[in-house]
Amino acid sequence: MNSTTTSDTTAFSIALQPLRWGDPLRWLALGWSDLRAAPGVGAFYGACFWGMALVLGWVFQRQPEYVMSLASGCLLVGPFLAMGLYDTSRRREQGLAPELGRSLTCWDRHLGSMGMLVLVLIIFELLWGRASLVVFAVFFHTGLPSTTGVVDALLNPQNWSFVALYLMVGGLFAALVFSSTVVSIPMILDRDTDALTAAITSMRVVLDNPGVMLLWGGLISLLVLLSLSAWGAGLLVVGPLLGHASWHAYRTAVRPAVQAGPAAP
Image 1: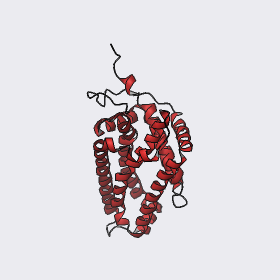
Image 2: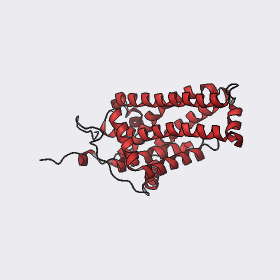
Image 3: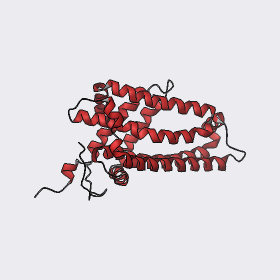
Image 4: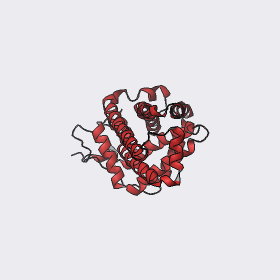
């Protein structure tokens, strides 16, 4: 059963809880506990994340112009994979045994909300790609560089202004994606809210706890970057670990629905 909210619940009526600086490390510890308790589920989703990374890397090396299109496909699949990990953590929280089969279909009752959220993510990704092309066009008047040329350009200290603007644009869109999804997908699973309510609540969590959420985003980025060594094999562990930990981030940041509503008469 979902702990759903009432129909008159809005994004601004959902009660949040203050976060502490030690919470991100605690989320990782709880995520590791979930991963150890359900290694088969974690191995399946970890393999999926690793496979996506390998395909993206191969396309970037062979046909970099198609990376953004493929990334859009990953944005279609990624949230549904993450929801399976959230469902596994939720079942452990409820004292139920994790089930891979159930985790693969846990999104079917939330397809409308998930579809809308994924659409928003794809729009962000397309705008991000367009903005990146504009930055490249401003600095490379003779045409877009090849894959090797992009790497050389990023590492060339003479292109500091290009690197700074490129990172600023990328950071802006990354912040939008992070703030709108950091707790929205587990919230859709748990409360069956609509995508707009979940995204706004997620942004409220970030705005109310900017320091802690910046730390959490930094830890996520660091772990993902470290996992990309050795052909991304680290995603076998880091992918499901972050998925489980994100469920606990939601649980800590958003007060349970039974506590958020008015007291019974």
